[in-house]
Image (tube, rainbow, N blue to C red):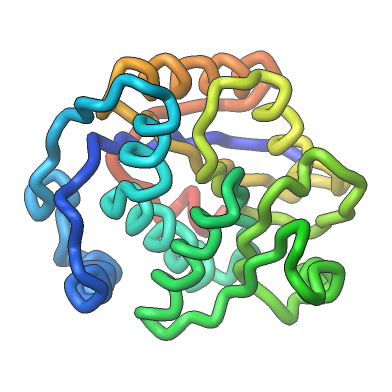
Length: 221
């Protein structure tokens, strides 16, 4: 399979929002009325320890999480099958809840989830068009038929990035894979990690571009 990676620009953390506000903002973005740069008050992360940077810049960054949900729903509306890969279970649950706010029932498969194999079978059969998965690149779970892979986990590991990418390239043929990742700019550590992932994609021969949004051509390819 051929692959194209789009790294969406994403700023720092935003001030916490209540659930109702998040739901309204997601709906606005789906309708083309939300500009992340204008609607969110972006601030630089002040955290220094990695666990705090990860929490504020990745896990609890609602601007970023909304961008993930928005990208997945756009791809779904174009008829494409989507796998969202996360590292932390709490991040997967947060994204799952965010999907629920806008009326999407998206299953989350992780090491301790009941029916994990059934969820992946549903992805293979087409029963599930969007699935959130945690840790599946580290084991033998077979996840074919991926058309859009969203790397929501961040991180800097070249090996882990390539393993995630490999999940979407297992099927032979001419079907293209769209990889969606993020250029996180809210902290110097996040910037460094984003650049490392970008290098990993290029090393695998993936065409990479940075962008503010996804194009209709990419989503429909």
